[in-house]
Amino acid sequence: MVQTSSPERETDAGPTSSVSAPSAPSAPEYASWISRDRSTDAASLTMRREAAELVERVVAHYRDNTTHEADGQWTEPVAHYLDADRWQRETDAVHRSVPLPLAMSCELPGPNTYKAIDVLGIPVLITRDRQGAVHAMINACRHRGAKLLEPGCGVSKRLICPYHSWSYDLAGELRGVYAEKTFGEVAREGRSLVRLPAGERAGIVFVSLDPAAEPDLDAWLGDLQPLLEGLRLAECHHYSTSELTSPNWKVTLDGYLETYHFASLHPKTVFETNLSNMMAHDTWGPHQRIAPALRPIAQAVDLPPDQRDPGDCVGPIYWLFPGLAIAGGWRQKIAVSLVLPRTATESVTQQIILLREPAVTEEERRAADRFGEWFHEVVRDEDYATTYGVQQGLQALDGTDFVFGRNEPGLQHFHRTIHRHLDSGATAAPRAAR
Image (cartoon, rainbow, N blue to C red; front, side):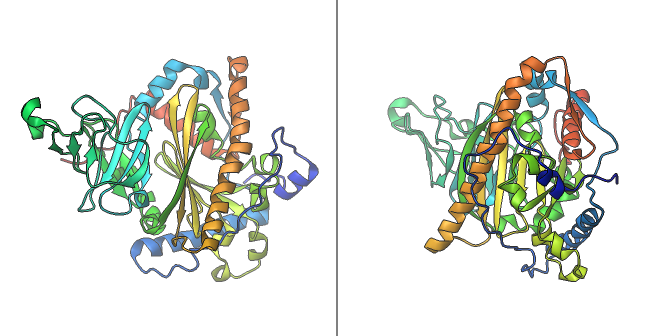
């Protein structure tokens, strides 16, 4: 790898950010989970083995003062962020075609639970029926199209339309028609909610917006799936969800896929726990992982490999295309970001906080609150404040291009994947065998 300047010296020497939070929130306490995990299933063993190898790679970067680099730079025309027609083609080729990770399994923790979410103007309802199976459907009554449930998570044994009280079970089957004697008989089999393909893998619920799709989720996740299964996300507890509006989806996601900005944009927050411009990078098909070095690596570098705690040394962010980031998967508290386009100039971000153990005591709830609030404030006041500034300048920069450096391989992979979907006319993820 090409030698890079020291992340420590870079910040001390004075790269400054034009955006700074008035009072940066103190970083919450982080506790490693991976070092305490004693599971012996194949996925857990694979995950721990791979984690040890990943730590060695990041330790090598620390020793050599390097970072993972792409073969060259990548330029992306600014027009690709501005063109409303291209945005429509992108969302058609990507969001309306591939299986979208729209929920964490623990957001639907038991029978008769649901998550309602709007995606590209489509009201989506994800449910877990009384047998525990996951379903997805259009969140609209088949009588007159009223929304059954407002966005959010909850528990309900029946889905009852607020307009005329038609009722459905959690699999979307029509079960009741109010005053059917005067309304007229309704054929139940023809008035179920419109179903969307859905499946559950590694603690994540995937939904396809195309009702005719037959996605093969195992092929879609590929070799990343065992590593995700090793994180045991399905066993976590959903603590909270908050939302942020954000700029154009690509402007927003560009900030999730590199560590180059940590020292300059987050000097009093993220950079307090993470080194800047120092990471390992891996890809699995359209998906990827960036793995920044954490500050305790400075002490761990002199320890024997078997004495290094991966959760203290590396902070991997698993990123599922087209927009789910799982940060802290090796720790006790996990922050999940789900970024979805809303219009050509706006997206929405759900921040989902997961805990390895439920917050029972007041102290545990305060700690979970601090974690979620810190995450929310840093993203809102530092990341998104900056990316809104990026979006404001796009029109004036039309006709030019952005350049992604060799040290930003995650950005390059993300945009290359979008280009591939557009250029090849890809309309779906791998389909299940018949």
